[in-house]
Image 1 (tube, one colour):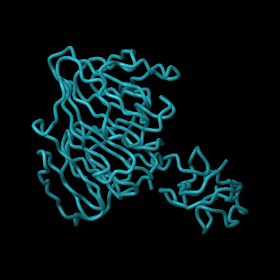
Image 2 (cartoon, helix red, strand yellow; image 1 turned 90 degrees about the horizontal axis):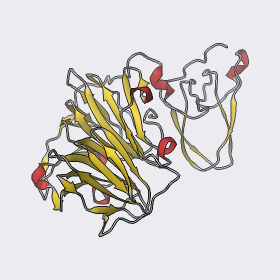
Image 3 (cartoon, helix red, strand yellow; image 1 turned 120 degrees about the horizontal axis):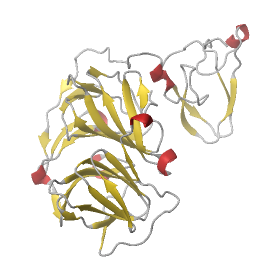
Image 4 (cartoon, one colour; image 1 turned 180 degrees about the horizontal axis):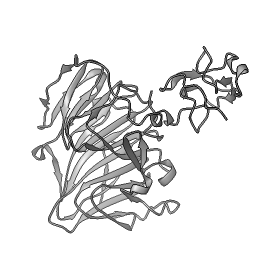
Length: 351
């Protein structure tokens, strides 16, 4: 069968109505993209009939190579050997970091996007755990909360975020995570899934601290600190830990990502992924979700519409819903990052 014509690479954002029928152009020749105008009559293609099961915004495939017809599944990122790079000039205003109350440094970019840098002395202490809230409702986030945390030798407090999924990422160090009496070994670049109403505790038997992110969706910015570990544990998801596995990596041209925690692997509406990008600057793009990114290695710049700021390992980036952005890596050896968003979908889907 012949290949369809690529109408454009990025998908079309369309407001649909529940129960309404749409005919998606499969040939790529329609002048009324992403929908059919009859141009397929000169081809072997037929439009796809699709009925919206809910009202809202949907991303309809424009490259015509999606496996999730008619909606985008990120396949447009596979149509080139090189990920789409920025063509814009260097006209963005450079934003400096400003010290916040408590000692953290924050660079405010366009429309509520920001980068935050937390020195050790700014962290709050509770037993063997130190932590700092880097994303919350006070920062403009509507869906997610996030903390940076370290656990020194010993046991952390027992924490619970009622009604919310908690997703951990261990950046460095090793130890165990106890979830409702079930113990899991963790080490560097490991994701951990904690289901709603479950409690967890981190144990570090080493001298080096465990450095981690704790992300909570939906919002639950004040954890419960418990005296005893409750036995609540969702047995339908027995495996809660996922480390880096090259066999599970997905390519986006010359970049890759691996979903560590997500709806398919752990039945959670939160997606946590680890990625690597070469020395380059991605083209501006948007997502239909709030996103947080933490730089693991490499340096560069975070760009938004009219601003940019330098980023380095340990920095946390918050991206509001639909915020245009691009991440630039200036390090010859590339950049590694951990990303998280809610609700769950593929990190390759953007517009």
